[in-house]
Each structure stands twice: as structure tokens, then as C-alpha cells.
Length: 512
Image 1 (tube, one colour):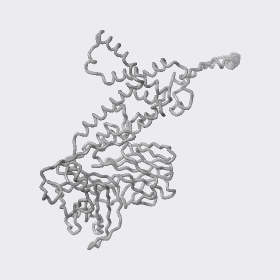
Image 2 (image 1 turned 90 degrees about the vertical axis):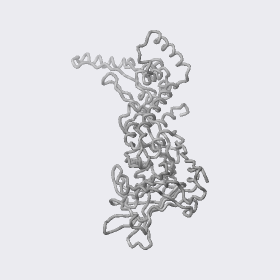
Image 3 (image 1 turned 135 degrees about the vertical axis):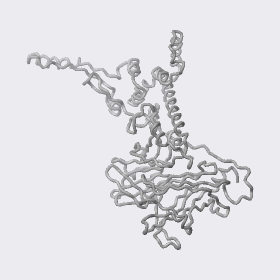
Image 4 (image 1 turned 90 degrees about the horizontal axis):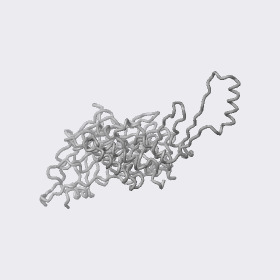
């Protein structure tokens, strides 16, 4: 892997050698795994006799074939000169060339030939001037410029071609992400951007021994302010052998040749988050049904284990829409992309100000399952007095338990749906909460998408059955109480508090 081939395998997901027959019913290209284990590809040609020959001729042919078996034509690609192989590879498209480079070390270097890639680069990214009819002088200049190709190291023009392709994908995404929702200031065309870019998500499960298991997402659900991604498979590694799980965004390098989520075209990986699974069973279980138990690993990861044998059933990741495409595309395979700090420097606030914010904050909260929405609400003009600061957090009182007019109903029967290849179910004690806190200029100051657990609670002066959920991280948190009203057969949020760290506010406003 020190040659750089492992780097391409890590950065490109789903590379496979292309199969294609030669001379009709002749031999075919082998798969990538088979080819790497053999000395090379080989073609064999046989001459089939007609059915009208006599028995004598057949007997003579049988013995002559035995005597001349060594003369049967056998051509191995590994024995062919590199110049001829490069000429053959020059007729392949870019996707196939990248795949061929994963077959063996020799083909990796052959497929990096600068002359092949500089021609593909010129054809794909042709300048406006090159569209004019070339004169003899221009043709001569072009032929002379090819001499400089050999001055570059091997693979230079391949890297330039792929870099240009990635830039075109990012440019297309920038245009599609420009419109934002007025209510939340988040991208309004998430589905369209996913379709244009072909963006998907991949997890790499690593065992303590170092063995890796790469899995592309099975399906996903696009919510108003987040994306829920699912992975399920029949051949999961045993959970006790796993040490980490890495979540990546996987984007096709060649966007114009992207056909669908199941394509095997090369992709580059962008690390989003690393999760520690070594002590998964010791983590807090947030729900269960008769088939699975689910564990939450912050931020936003849900792991389901079978009740019967404790093996992996499914993995679900919740990714907030703010910075979704930047984090899924701009990072590398080892370092996640960090959103640039967006601070609001304010110098004209009076020292006697008794609350944080000038025009007030705004909160948008969604409560949903994997595909079903239960609540979608926005709170405006949020303030907090200095007396509300406790343990380094500012408290915003959203819904008061004693004010019935503020209570909000949840539509439908709450719970989290899950699905695998063979079974599906619903966990009633688990929901997903998406929160986006905006400042007075409608810039996201805190955002989160995470599963939470509904636990039984006892509320003062509240006779109905009650439940609560909470979430807390280093930036902010939420605490909520739900009441069950049997006469209407629905849940109501009867108390809702939002917390934001003082350190985050000081950094955001640029002042103490």
C-alpha cells in the first residue's frame, strides 16, 4: 500500500474491474479480486472443427491437438510491452481507468500515464479558444506542448483531472445550495442537491485487529432540518470485535457518469465523525422492543443490537442540515471538515443589559421518528436575564408547565421505526429531536440532531402520566416534559427548556 494504491482505494469506494467479453464468446476480464491474485490476464483462442468431418479426420485432429497442445496461442498481458498496454488503456474512459488501476501494482502505474490523462483533461475541460478550428500553427504548438507532459511525475495529470472533477461537483453544489429557508436559514433544496451530486454516506467498521468493513448506506430519509441515514446487512461483524466506527460522506468523482446510489463508480471520502464502539454495551440503552435493543453514541449515532444473540442489527446516523454538504464533501479521509467560525462582534451593547441578545433569539424544533413527524414548531424573541445563568449555561424558558396555552400537541403515536433486510419494528420510547437556535441575524448559533429516550417522570400538580427527555453537550442542551392525555389520546409538551453555554455566547458575540 506504500505505493499510493491504498490511498486511492481508501479515497474511492466501490472500485471494481470492468467486465467485458473479447471476440464474442471468448474469454472475459476477471474480477478485480481474482485478477490481483493471478499473474495477469490471459486470452486463449481455440479453433472449433465443423461437425461434418469424418471419424478419421476427427481421430487425426485429436492426436494432432495432443501433440501440438503447446502451440495453442496463449498471450498474457503481463508479458506484453508497456507501450502496447498503454495504447490499449488509452481507449478506456476515466472511470474504467481508475478501476483498472486497482487491479495490480503494474496496472496502477500504467493507468497513471500522463499522456493518457492530459488528453482526457484537454477533452473534458476544453477552453473556449480550443473550440475554434485549429490551424496548422496551433496543431504544431499543441504537439510541442505534449513534450512537457514527460516533465511531470507519474500520475500528475490524473490528479489534475480528478481535482478538476471534484471542483466541478463543488461548484454545482454551491449553486444548488444558495436558496435557504426564511424560517431556519438552512438549505431549501437538500433533495435536489443530493440528486445532483450523487452524495451518499459510508461507514467503516474497524475491528481491534485492524480489519475494516466498508458499507454504503442502505437507504436514507431527508427531513426538514436533517438527514437520517440507515445501514443494515446480513453479514455484520460481531459487535464485540469492533473498536471504532467512522462515518464518511461518499461523493462520485465523475458526476456526469453518476447513475444511481448502487453504482460502483469511484468516490472520494470525507470524514464526518469518529465513534468509539469498544464499550458499546456499557453505553446507556435508550429503547428496545421484542427484537432489538438500541444504544445512542453521541453525536447522533444509533446502534441496534439483536435481542437474541447480541449481534449488530442496524446502524442509523442523524446529520443536521447545517453544513451537511460541506462536512460530507470538503473533508479528507482522515481529517473532518470544520465549519469556519461565524461570530457576531457587538460593541454597542450597554453594560447594564440584563439579557443576552438584542432582538432576541429564535428556535426551531422538530420531533420525528425515522420517517414520521410529530412536531414542527418555531419560537421567536427568546431572551434570558442574567439571573437565568447557572453552571455556565444560559436557560431559555420556552414552554411553562403552569401555562396551558403554551402546551403543544404531538401528532400521532410517537416512536422510532427501524428496518433490516428481514425484520422491522418500532421503538415507542425513542424519538429524534432536531434543534436549530438562530441569533438575531438568523445565523445558526447552535444546532443538533440526535435520538433521545422517553423516560417516565413525576410532575408536580400534573395528574396525567408524564414522560421526559433530555439532551446535553458542551454547547447546549434541551429538557422537556411530555404529558399523556387519555381523553384526546395524544402527547403534549408541557415544559420545554433550552440551555446554551456562556462560553459559546461570549465567543459568538466577541465580548465577555
